[in-house]
Image (cartoon, rainbow, N blue to C red; front, side, top):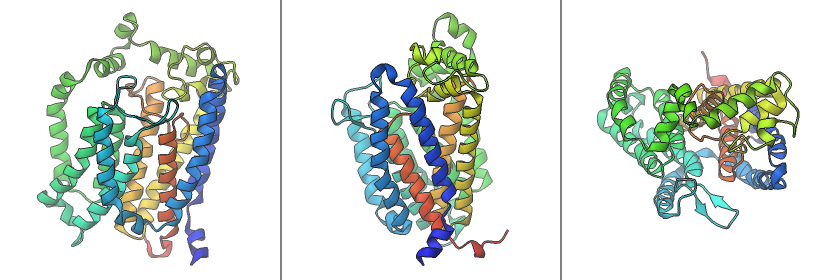
Length: 369
């Protein structure tokens, strides 16, 4: 039994995540020399802390884990409500301040908890068949439990993380076999409500969107500063980069925040296209392998967990890389395994553990194209 689990395990996703984490540590080491490597040291500590979470998520049967997902979901909702009463940091109430240097972001852990619970819920709703999710009352139940954490995260406000949740939920719904008519209705509703939502956005969110759609005009008001510095950094790196500790935008403090939102720009400037191209390929491998695990999972719960995780990784990869090179609006979304952030790193490795877990318990031979 143990040998079969090890043989079936998709070890490539663990290898990819470790390589990404190592690249992130190298970039952080260079980017934090002016602060005596403070964030680099913390990231190493968080990497070590992540290991037991990775191991536990990979060895405890995911069907056992999902049995406790309802309680975990209630707990996370409580944390997301509680964090709204904390003091704002950088304009958002997203963190619990444990110590002066240690903060916890419940919306990060909430990603994996929400995916586990929604996978469990979807499986219950489809107990009589996959088509059951297309019954309007069952779809409404699923959407209500999906919207609750998203609404609380928007309240913080943290629109980037909310979009990550939405992407994961859409991946799960698509995988569950939702009828095309609901997709068409959703597209129409989004198209109608988009202007209303746009006008209701706070000033800082509107500025970011305006910078994306009209960078020239925004640059005149100095609102496109972060974007321009990011593009300059990535372009200056060319093929092989300027070398560690030698990036102008990175070392002179023009990139901000360089350890989180714009870590990809740091890598582009100091390590060049070779490194950024490699990172992009690694993320593509990670997402496609996650989708493959979802496709070959032994049951629906495993499939929904894996596809939800694929959605999270896909959104973060696309949004972070896209925003640093000006292809998407800036939302403050970190780059998984690479950007500085303890809550994010632990959550990402829990996701990797779950993917290893699901892949180890599949039976490849029974799946035929």
